[in-house]
Figure (cartoon, rainbow, N blue to C red):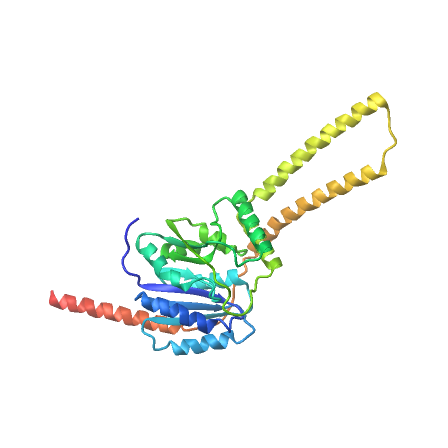
Length: 344
């Protein structure tokens, strides 16, 4: 891997929903780290239809950072709650950095890991993953569910999805551009972020408890999210159901031959009501499960065909400063070039 030069701009992507209690502490913690690495930065907050005071706090922070020469805060406020995957997509679409780092604002992902990520990037890594060392902070049930999910996704998915790795990672600009080419509406960001590949390094960390507030991911939402991951990145459930159909047909054929031979040898028995009902219920259940799996894929096709936008923006703030900074940088570059020309 080749060594890279200094970073021009770092983009921090922070989707948030009802995070009024955590945002001030998050900004204080991450700006201290970013200013220590001596690089320009932008923090892009995406307010995903928050119902508390999140939007007003972010607008005030933009004003606070108006005179900051090294960094700036930008805001995208969505028209309603589209979900974290859509909010993160909006942040990726707006990011202008040479490196991009998605992170949650609840301070469970350690911001102190960023300098190590940047060092890995300078050494040539295109992607630097942040992997949890353990899940001691999770309940036993959540631990088992996560373990089962990663086992399933590893067995069914067409490409490797890193275990115990969330959205928190560093991505080089070319990786971000490849991600922006993926327009699907049902978005499973763990899979989307890992799909491009490129040179990847991994750092491990211990996850802290939430700084404040509560998680917005109850069990049913996590379960549906896991289904999105399986159905978005694998057709194995459809193929498995074909195998099940062939196996049941083969068993049914053997049973049919057994009944015919038994009837020819021993004669006709009085049919049993319980056995007939059991067989009917069993095969009815099998058919319904198969239709359900088929319906999951058909439903996703239906959503993709409609081509609705992934998100809608109600308000953008703080991006004017980006344009002014770009103009100032261009002016400085032009002045430097003019001076060099005169010297020659």
